Length: 126
Figure 1: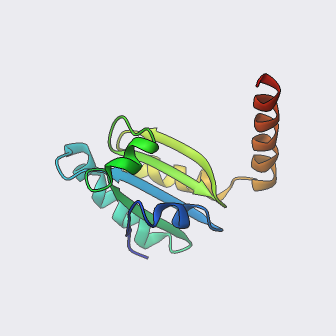
Figure 2: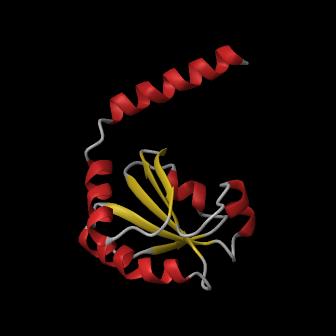
């Protein structure tokens, strides 16, 4: 599968579904974004079992602000609607492949348990 473009209108629907979704937040003027683009595109073609989305931060400024994107490129990974990775900076191909493998290998029952524990701890603090 090639990459898909997401917008403020399609972001939530894209990342909250079942499965794995990678989001590359980028801008046309960003040199590191342009360097990372071929790596991201190649991975999207090699991993048809995941969705690879691109978010143009210039065209979707409100969403970029809501996501608190401070630097680009910012790479996010969602699995079954849960944000499991977020980091600014372009990854080399081998590191990106490693990340994809790690996201695919996650024990989602354990991740959901950790999220529930964090939410409970936050509620106790409030």
